[in-house]
Length: 191
Image (tube, rainbow, N blue to C red; front, side, top):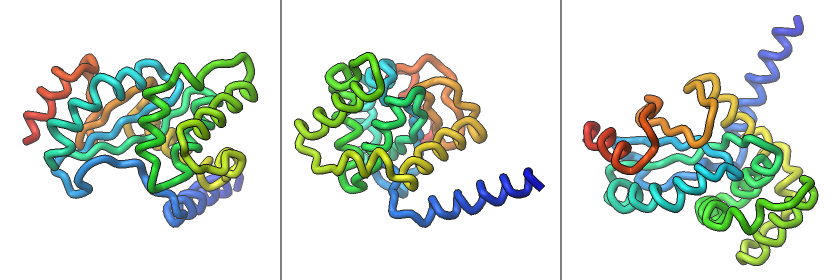
């Protein structure tokens, strides 16, 4: 009976999330031939490096040209990343801008010795960047929280994600060293 209850909760919880007014953070043509999924944690320095050094090249060569789209999925590795993920999902029309800002300036807000201290830095950072967000509402929004956690659960179940960043290309896990040269080789085979 407990198993059935858990399955029903997960099923109805997933249905609820799908109907919520929360949109996936995507860049590029939604009908592109190539779909890149990036599972990331907002406190991960390698993820920030991906956004600073690899994503702009991907954007220029594949996303802006309509060959590929990229979907950013949440895989928070700690409470700080979890809260930042909720902030990035809070305003659907600015999700990509917020995400890019958080990665580009990661060291400005990921500091402090307690979650409360880091949350305060995150809140100040978001305000200083000019994003009009009700921070407390975003952090405590149960639908957004479930959405972020479901990304992580799906990553583990469907793609065996266990580290960030993890890149998935057309439903296949990218298993080479993550650099632009290797990504480009894989993408060129799909064009």
